[in-house]
Image 1 (cartoon, rainbow, N blue to C red):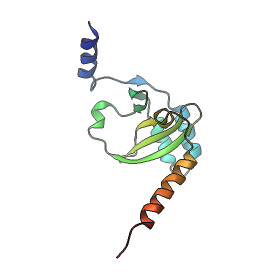
Image 2: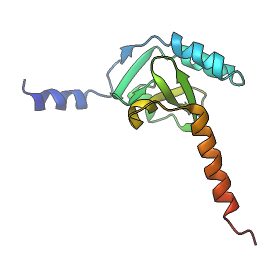
Image 3: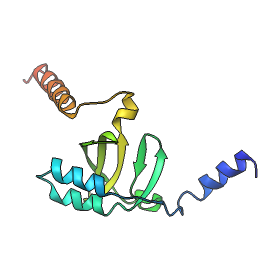
Length: 133
């Protein structure tokens, strides 16, 4: 089978791929330590036992078939000791849709505190610059 045929078959069977086994324990520990106000999300991570890697920058935890029915709710930052800063996609049903490896995306380590302050400054600047008539 040539490389084109191999890629085509992988694309064709993408919705029936069972995913690869995934051990969520380190993510559960990080979620418990950092998201004390959302303990249910640690439980949601504990249910992430299969993974579908989109590429080296993003991993899905919902199967391709489920992705069509689940809806995005919010992003949360999570600092992981070996994976770096992660952006966690939380779905409306409380499940974890996937994680984006922010350090890999940006090409250098990111600090969650600085990211939050930057977002706050951006919101304040946007709101402060508007005219309210």
